Length: 468
Image (spheres, rainbow, N blue to C red):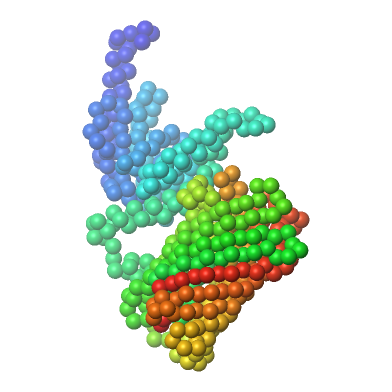
């Protein structure tokens, strides 16, 4: 201030305010850009109309040009502070902004990256507690001590931003898309073809419901014992779920199948060998006939959170399955498809084959391998029985950031008793073969936990059941 003096200070202030006026006028003249509020000083925030195109994608393009961009939330916006260092290049800024806007408009599929992705995600998360946890995690990664090495703080900041959790980027993409469509819905700009495409692209649940009944509510409890003469993993499993089919039109159904499960696993002979992990999964299925032919399409995308704590950092998984069905006869259908899930040990891809076959009035064969296959026989209106095979594979995030993988192969005989036409009680007994608990720190060969014997198990379940 002493160096500038009063006249020098006023000259700088005048130059800055003239730059602000030029920036304000340029933003107002740019179609699709909206100034936030009524700025009276040298900071102007702006966004796009209804955030279409995404302002944070524009911010990324500006940063590629060398501009330092600051981002805000509620609404999503960016700002420029007019300073002596940039007042002379306002015209260049407006030109680069227009170029970035044109790019974002021409590429609506583009998503924010780096710090823009973080700001965008925080602005859209419906659960503010997740924001707090995510910010704390990012701050720890940026400024926390690194054991055994020294690292420049700027490099740590870049790593924390550029290598944010996978679920953060995926969630940001989903929420960004939902926000765009919500804005279009408000304006009534969604064409009829959108609703058709919505169902057709719902593609990619480990279990697609191929069975002669629907369970609006089911509870299962499984107790897997220790096999003799093996280093084994005694396990209990609780499962609570629901099938809620919604008929859209003839032979077209929407299926909601949310479920919760919890595993208590003891790895004998090891310290800290007890794991209690849980999962909440939200699958949404769609069954579509392909015209008037014998072919059909079944799809079930899903989102799930797996771990010792639900909704924790890096506990989210995205995936699903899609199958094509061929109805050879009215009571005989075959399926083939693919299951894909973003497991913590990597992308898990499994081909699927399925059958839905009423062999005769009393006998039914149904399921999708390798998930489940069941044989059912009806003795009378109250008693059913048969054999079942299940092969679950899941991974769960631990509190220390590692994960465990659970694999099992279950063969069993079961007995259903209908105490009421819609109340089924099931007793199931069988063996668990080649059951595996694999912590992430274990190697893929030497330390893998495998049961060499057959571990007996008992499963009790009850369901409100509607037979089809």
